[in-house]
Image 1 (cartoon, rainbow over the protein chains, first blue to last red):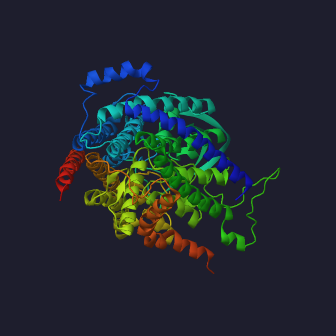
Image 2 (image 1 turned 135 degrees about the vertical axis):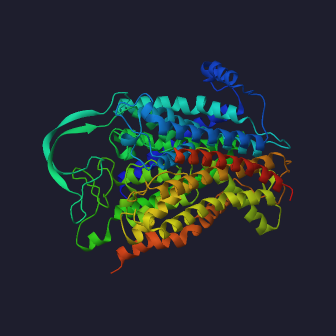
Image 3 (image 1 turned 180 degrees about the horizontal axis):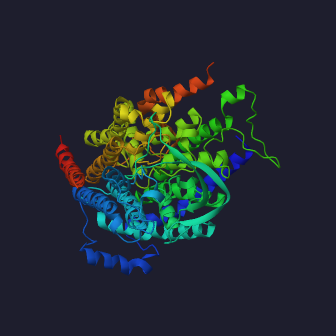
Length: 604
Length: 31
């Protein structure tokens, strides 16, 4: 690891922790309904929204009512986004004349954005109108993130309340999260991105004359738009010269800001944050990485404040940070070491600093302006948090370097995790860790004074088992279907990794793609939609069930046999549980993909 | 058009089934 890399990572983590503390305290005020400052300005608008929609903000819900409201909101969101994509050709703000999105792709995209996954089987600049990008996709970036954070708020209330049936009001939590947390942060970040060079315009694509006309083979098409084939079945082409370039643009900055802050990840452009309009400068790259991790890290502080024991939030934040740093280090060092096959040929892959600086290592698939450190840091941040954004192509990483983002996803998106869903998932792991510790010492396990009983463990088991089940079954299904297997760009172990990554990403609501998989096929669109739907909602419902069950319990006074959950020992236990459950579940599959590929690379 | 109707029905059924899941989980309490 170079000095430069070490400095950048330490600086990044220091800024992250420095900002997480005040933001966490602010969010606690929002969820506790206390004055937060912005309510003086936005309070009247919030109350107007409640009046118009007929919501009584003072009426709290039990866990079932909360779950029904959450699901009804999500179902209607999917439905409206599906319809909008199918009708976009007839709707305004479509200057480039985008056609209606194909039905299976529209379903996949609707589920993807409503579930906060943002898996994209389409190129944004060539498929979606501006109205779809803004009213459909960007608005869901806000609302799906807010819905996830609302579920977390309900879970925290379940842990902090005693002998209560109510967990808050879903509509109030959704509104306050959007108005007081996501929107202000997004406006600030979007303005900074515009300052850095990200476009924010309603004008259609621009055309520019290129400096040097370029010759290319233009594929011939018949009257119906199908390629004309020769006798050998290959597409016929004619020589052509390119003199102009089409430059896509649009309301990019506004989508970019919430894409990172809401751990959504769906980019305006196909190549996401590797595109110079989405991510114009090293400073914008730093801010985007920070925006991805900021809310998930700050929510740990919020949790500590709301349960009246800040040490509990700190211990979870420490466990997340340790896992993050170790896995980031593994990815970074693997990429920095480069390709052993090239080393065997005598290629010098050593990084050099100073005037003749060059990054060394494996630069394939990475932006030269970001280098290995900022690419791997971005990859770890985006895959640890269910944010599908990328600024480099994970498919081009070394086998072990590419395995790290995959593993971060497969751990269940809890290493900081998605906004709301990440800390919810980690709290489920905490419950399992407490249960395991209780079994070891022969006492009834308890967390924050609440007894953990079979019902909570049943729900926790479901939450932990559903994503691996979906990931592995989806991968197995795709490997059995020739059409699905033909969609991979690389044969062998690497191709298997492409499919495993895709289903892991969709089932854990991450949304990033390994690349190399042409997944816009009905099978991938439908199987992916099912994985994203079940991976989000069939986890949120048992999470709320745990919240409801815990809220109804008494708080047991701490005794000599109570396991302290704020100590380094517990942090170690929690990390062990996450690694054992998450990593071992996927070890056989990883052995067939990246590990086999690595052994092929280092073997003779 | 047929696929649109099929997908819309699928969304509605999947949402209703997930709402039903909440009732099922509630029935598991105390067992």
